[in-house]
Image (cartoon, rainbow, N blue to C red; front, side, top):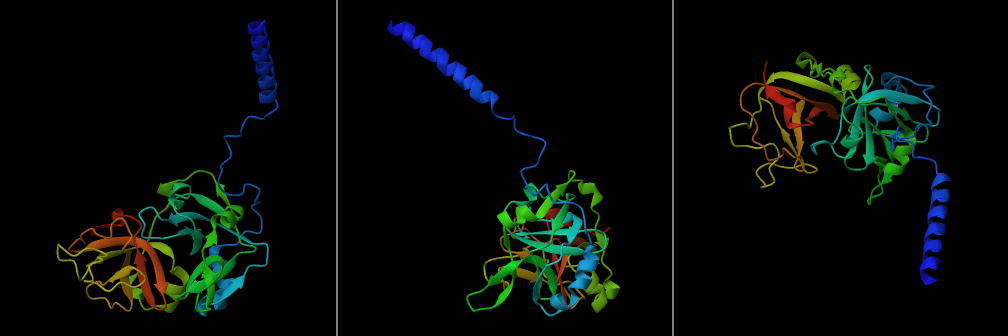
Length: 284
């Protein structure tokens, strides 16, 4: 009798399990777990228009909330893949570029170079550090200073939408014009873009010196080393490398090189942020 009872119990459990399984929908594996798919592609402005709208805020290192229902769309041209860019992605739509600050690591995993995204700006903040435009949320430091900083991944996830799949070959750097090194308008229009400066030479490259040493041989500012180029004032152009970058301890190449990276600004100084070790090559 006990055996028959156990068999009946097992049959009942199997039937119930089958019924419960039928009541659940199969997961939709076609929809990305990242971003907000409900964001509509409406009221989209160019990044150049965004920079113009908030020109005064950016120029004065201010901060302003986006209260209008506006969006931007662009392709990722820079991320945190080798640690030299931290908690940021940079997008470009062909008219200009903008930095987006996100308090999350491993952004390159779902925002690789060439991935197009739509960003809903309403409720986010436009600001600047050293006149470099940034998108994020307000942050107040211990000293009481308030500025735009990294948004949580939850806020970010609600404000962007992935468009299609990544196409790295669609991202091509712009050649930096050394003849316009001191041109204020050129800097305002192009800061934050993926660019290449050709035929330059790192002053400290001697076959032994590395990009960002931590032995005290180079002054670090915010854990970054600024490296000069021969014949170019360091107040105009530097190669900036984080001591946390994967390639911080790599020996800098000698001779003439072509350097690609995100050309950010700090006031009137161009700061090149290489994304990977492949961003520096012998001059062509």
